[in-house]
Length: 298
Image 1: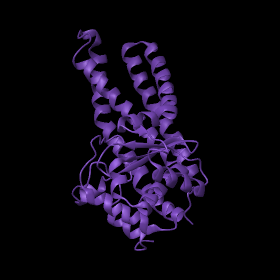
Image 2: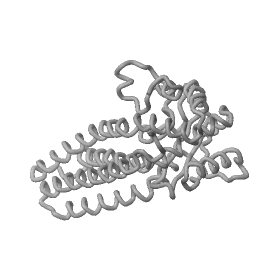
Image 3: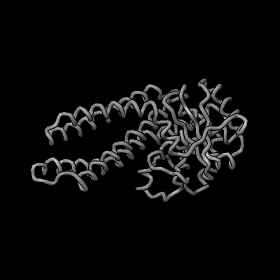
Image 4: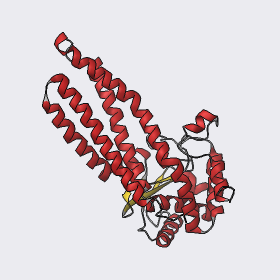
C-alpha cells in the first residue's frame, strides 16, 4: 500500500549517490587540469571544492531555492487558513509543521524544500491562494507534505545546487580559456584540454540536469498525489486543484529551469504535447494525474 514514507530510504541512497557522483566529476576535472599543467595543487583544490560544495548543497540548498523563487516567510496572523490547514495536515501525517512561504505571483503553484522533515518548508504562490477553495488547498498542501515525508525534497533540492555549479564550472572554463590566459605553445595542450572540458561540461550539464529531473520528478509526482489523497481521504480535492492550476496556462515570473521539477505543476505553463515534448516533461501530463486520482489508472 502506498504510504507517505514509501521511498524514504531510496531517496536517501539516491541523494548520497548524486553527491558522490558530483565529487567524482569534480575530482576527474581537477586531475585533468593538474596533469595538463603539471600542478598537483589544482587536484587538491578540486578535492576541497567538491567537499565544500557537497556540504553546502546539503545544508543550504533549500535557502538558495527559496531565494531564487522570491519566497517570503509568513505568519499565522497574515494567512490563518493556509497556516491552519498545514498545521492540521502535518499532525495527521505525523511530521513537524514546515515553515510557510508565499511567492507573490499570479500563477498558481507550490513546492516543498528542505533537507529533512525537521528542516522543511512549503512555498505557495499568491495566485494559488486566490483560485483554490479550502478542500483544493488541502489537497495541494497534502501533496507537498508527502514530498517532505518521502524525503523527495532533499533529492530535488540538492540537484538544483550541484547541477547548477557544474554548469557554472563549464562556463568558467570556456570563458577563461577563450578570453584570457597565456596563449604560447608551451601551454597549448593544456588550453586545448580546458576548451574541450569546458565545452563538454557546458553541453552535458543541462542534459544531465534534465535526465536527473526526469528520473526524480515524474514518478514522484504520482506518488505524492496518491499519498496526498490518502492523507486528506478526499482525492477529488487535489484533482480539482490540478485542473484549476493547469488551466491557468501562463508561466511564473521567476520560472527557472533549475527548479522547475520541484513545483507541483510546470512553472513555465502549459506547452505543446507532442511525443518528443512529453518525453522531456519534468511533470507527468495532468490528464494522467487526474485519471489516477479519480480511479482511471491503478
